[in-house]
Image 1 (cartoon, rainbow, N blue to C red):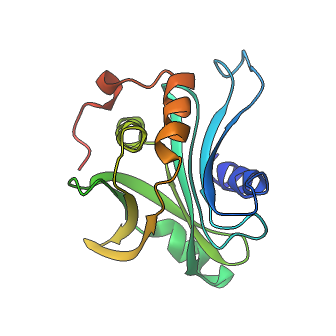
Image 2 (tube, rainbow, N blue to C red; image 1 turned 120 degrees about the horizontal axis):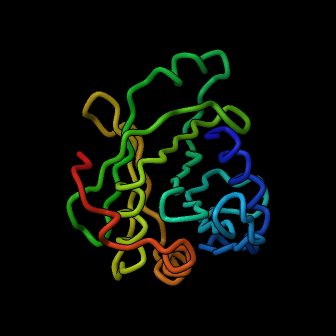
Length: 180
């Protein structure tokens, strides 16, 4: 499912305009999956983006975060990447980081893709960005150290994530629980 989601993120990036920005895309209603799919995506370029970061959901119980980083990784290292114990760290408006255990994959022309379907953490992250006023930064943690990070432009992120939060019925009560 994770690899399929990363591939979808690459396809969705082609819908982003000529400049880097956040976009919300709502799919058709799918009664087998609990409703329409919602994607909130940032891509730094519409054609072959170096980096993509986004959220995807159908319902409040089916949410994920996907990040295709700028980090180059050789395909021959894919098994090592898939065994790494990674975490995504998200800082919004300078608040303490929100962490989620994540899986890595080598994707799209030897890039590091990382993703999580930790419902509690992803919901907390989406809600935090939906109410952001200053900025969003994400990092990849390996063995307790941040090995890669990016500060994303805030732009329309609160509006875009607000649409995803509303479309998938994400609520603060779904975001409680230990994440660290």
